[in-house]
Image (cartoon, rainbow, N blue to C red; front, side, top):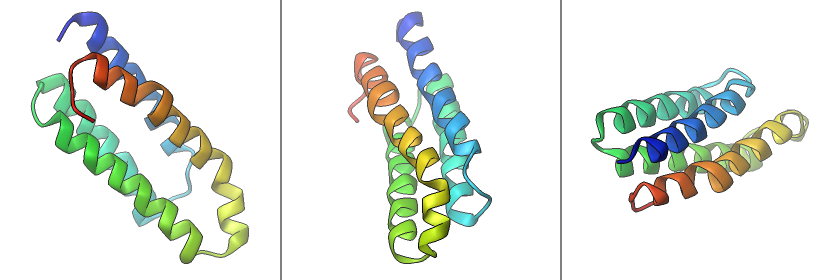
Length: 105
């Protein structure tokens, strides 16, 4: 992977970690943070990137489902801006960077 592609992917992951860090503490939110870290390690080692990326996406989907079915609406509204920024960072930064680097995501 060219150095500039690696930097783009790592920059996307950093954005995700930043917005994930703004989510409240909880099992599902912690899963997103751990998945982002796992993706960072996979990219640095150039091994298992697609799998780690899928785990991150699954964690985000799980949080979205949890927010719409399992929490008080007031709690969801409180973290909705962070969720929106997190999804935006994934869609606009991370996924394009991973595709440029040749990963199937």
